[in-house]
Image: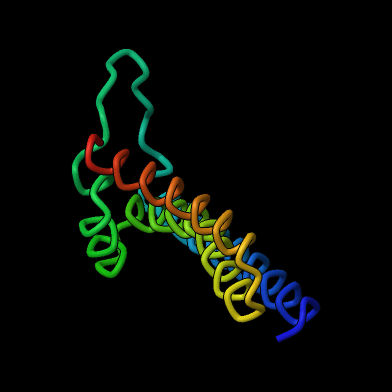
Length: 124
């Protein structure tokens, strides 16, 4: 692999991730508006998101069951996963090039990203 092919792969990955997440959010939003667009909004009482919209496994299950809010949440998760996946692919590319310094730096960045995501999910 050359630097050019790695850059091209990362470019395609980022574009595809953003496009896919946008399409998922759009589909979920359109479905939500079709089903609930006429309902009045209540801004006087705060209600937190139910577990089905906060826990990754339940979000995926809800999205496959065509639950509109779960589809929107899945699109947001895909958007969050896109740059994390980019860092992981960069790590593989640097490892193939045998660039130890960038492998170490990228591994550290990936570790921090994954730790923060997992710790946030554990507390959420």
